[in-house]
Image 1 (tube, rainbow, N blue to C red):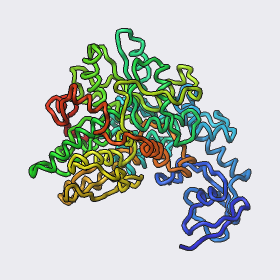
Image 2 (cartoon, helix red, strand yellow):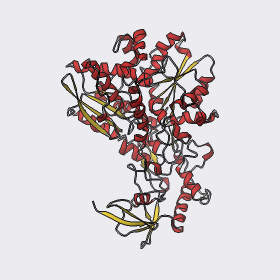
Image 3 (cartoon, one colour):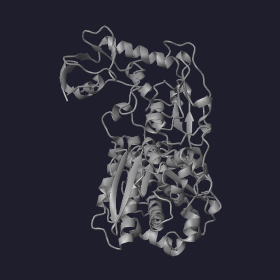
Image 4 (tube, helix red, strand yellow):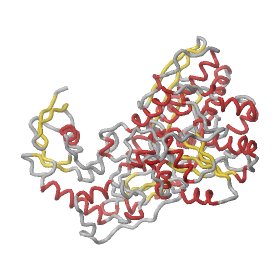
Length: 581
């Protein structure tokens, strides 16, 4: 590929042909602000915040879309450029409900930060403003178009990355707004609750439905024993909310914070992930050995993915594993085995989870998720909500003991359960157990690296007792759709498929800390967070679900064996075909 030589603010830089000015500026060491642009997602050139001067050009050009040319001289920070950016920002603020002090995104709002940086006058262009009703019709997401700047990142995430397509820009000119088909609420369209739209929104126009007050009410109820369980990937991201770099493991501090808040017990959902592997692995082996069974079998851990298949491929629901997700298994185990063990009535036991996902707020309300006659899970908080709760309680997160451990007896999970947080982790954990169960031999190498990494679709072939097993891993629902179309058409060669709704897996879930576009230009967020999980896995001595002593006790004392009647009644679920409109 031909190289192009240019200067940015007088700094010489060489980049490949086809490079945009924005990327050339980054390489030269200069920041160019963006609002509509986000790497690998959206390049609308609509916000005009990234304009730069090019020597010899009369017009300012957008750095996010203008391609470099030989000898180009770019100026990113001249008075003319700064004045144009300031006017653009002030015009955005003129039609923006400026409720910054009460906005969940205050301090992490890209519009707010740029307005501060450029010294904007928020009232300079005061006049007519659009006013919209807030859409809070779902149990997991709130859309407030009064704070929308029409960057269309959410549209790109929903359409391009997830292939869900329930939002787009409607109307024209001043009346343009982001809307769902037929002006329906998000609760009336086939939204899958993945939350990727929230992750890319630069303002507070999209946010998760807050459940903090609900949890605080449970904690204040003296008749309740309140247990909390944390998902694998929360520990790999929570620190970002307190100033730690992306990719910092804050497991101990997270546990200490939850204990300080006042939960009666703090457990690790990794344990329930191990139980998922025991049940799912048994189910897969059973299907492999039954010539009439439905294959490929597809994992059922991702709540957003479950909504997606129910809406888009209902005829393939028999391919889903019947296992509940780790969140729901955790609740079911707490409300049955743990309640019996501790002598607590399940009605007096409240189970809260901390999840990287907003779809979990919907999942807890699904049918067939109440093993003890009461809901398996009472409330679910995102990583972001937990961070806000820690701050509200006045806890100095950085001063907490990093070695604080989960509670016994159900606080122990294997690192096979831990790597559920990364795309490919469920498959690798399953293979570690299935391979040993089928062959009867200990694996010399339990690292199935072919299913690791953030590539959208990964595939591999393994041998089990001489039989070749084709597997696939997909993250991001556009990639899932590609695989499902082949399954639907009878073209699939796979026996076992893992699907996660969020690109990169749960580490990049819709409830994880927000990462601004400038950082995403430089850091592979999902890969960096996933590295936390794989690092812990590599160092740990308990790396297989079936070796977890807690799992063995659970089966010995209550669930009998994987796939038993009691296990099926408690730890498995069912699905429903959903109408799109």
